[in-house]
Length: 448
Image (tube, rainbow, N blue to C red; front, side, top):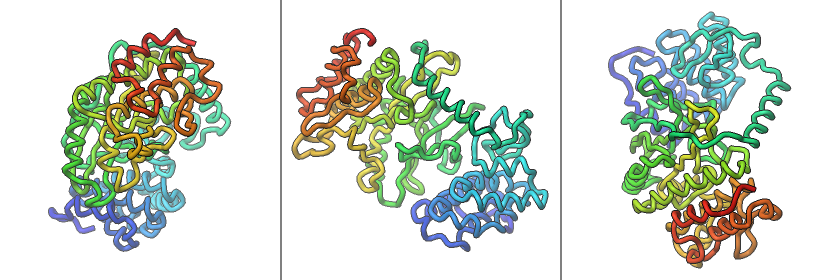
């Protein structure tokens, strides 16, 4: 690509790829790949994001642009962006990416270790890997030597490790952290400055995508939420929802709003910790930890209600966890996110509809049970408690919802009663406030 001081506007590159990716053919996609060679970092980042959206829609375009990718790899300045983009594209067409990087290895543009890392997908540096790696910025760096080559871990070893991790999660010991983990800072950046994190990608229960960003020398993980098309989300409603969430995100158990904007379409980045959301964790939790997590969540809901903010869609995917890095034996801290997103991005796009198993009666039949309001969040707390303590969603039987059959007997009677009251179909029969629920939870018997 000819380099000039002027180039395409990043939003002009990103917006059509985000809102209409199916309109791209090989020639148009090749122009995006060519933009990876531009002098402007912002243009390169926008092109990288745009290629991700296009490749997700039409994976075959990655192979169609193989020559253009190899040309970008020959350019030392463009190579980091090209490597990062290919590593993300490998999520959609691994074979085409392998052909591209194999060609680059033959040309001695990159070495074999980098090629293996690219095909394996974009991920943070693994301190146990050997050779070169693709880092957060797409650079090639050396990593400490290991006896196993990248991507050659024995399947039985991997399976054993996964089984051990599940077992550890199921039998979690530990205690509450002495201090809540530090939250990421608020930022004011463009969308293209947040790197897609293909190693985490889009989780099955979540309509958001994972991104990575660095601030003050520290690396953070966030969730990127966006409207998929221009005009699908009302900008005034989006700004209002963003303001409401920011109003309460100083609470220890509320996820931080990191950034947001309206170009090319309404989007935001919120805090995302590990290990994953409640929807992705092994449940049930040990009773003491489950009740502690539920108490922190109830406190966040009470704080929000006092500020006039209703979540309206509590479910396991709404609760992320952040580890207390300074104390690895402490329980991960819950942080509730997704405040207002269901109303902002959901109705016209269908991505924020609650799974029916966690929906309150008013979600399903508002004409009969009334509108979504603070009482809906009380039902949500009951559904979360059911997941945490029993390992499953509430069981629906005609007009009622309750604990899974055979599980209630394993809980203290008082605790079963607390959850059952939250799940009452009639709002007036639920707890009057999250504070009242939390008091009953604390008094709800000893651990089973």
